[in-house]
Length: 284
Ligand code: NDP
Image 1: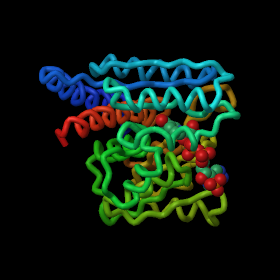
Image 2: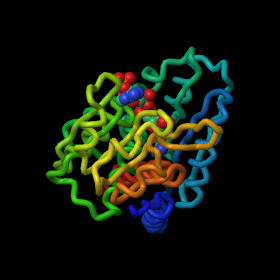
Image 3: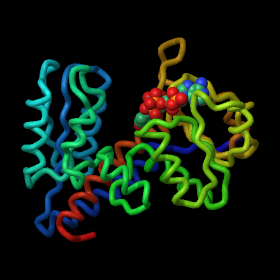
């Protein structure tokens, strides 16, 4: 029987740490602010934005929400980004993705000041992650690293397999594991013998987007299994990429969905916003 990694509990610890630091900064007259921009009415995006605002309240940050209509033009959105770049009260800017189809997220992200890009999606921040000299970590992969650390598992020298190569999860995840001296393999839809490759993993991170695709025959006995996936099963219930019930007896540690990686992503966003404020004020 594996130990279930409680993402909510680890996220709560991270947020407590951030709250204490934010309170200390407030005593020095430094307030921290996160601007969240949402365009259109996507219900999932609205939930994410609400959760981000709630997290700001929990840790004592100011949050500024900008809800723009679906038909917002690129010019209008860029104008807002420019205003937020120049706003001293705003330490972090987050533009909720996906944007409506007529807007190019790359153009928008490239216009956020790298020092306020708390999602770490700007090419400057992506490049810094690549060379291992970064202040912001991409939120989801950074959350995964915290969850692995919470198990006490040493990454150095371990076989780490990441399934998925997206720019927001798979690739940066692989890079963070590599920085910790893991031996890293990245898998994707063209990978041959996926099962065999996954079975080599001491640490397996699934970021595929396919409900319960990873069954126990993909898993080495005693592996640490981290499930980034957020999918709906055949009954419309939220589930991960990993078939939790099938894998839980084989893994040494495993994350549930919900309650695993999800809460960590928001906690790490708060961490990046705190970092942005500290860098701005020359504290780190
Ligand atoms: P993408 O769709 O951008 O990437 C999915 C990756 O999985 C691709 O690299 C794709 O390969 C690979 N893949 C797809 N099918 C297979 C297959 N059969 N075998 C092997 N690899 C496959 O997704 P994201 O990275 O954005 O997200 C992945 C999952 O994580 C989603 O469920 C998403 O909802 C969730 N997520 C959760 C977050 C959280 O906070 N918990 C945050 C972000 C995402 P290829 O490149 O060849 O197409």
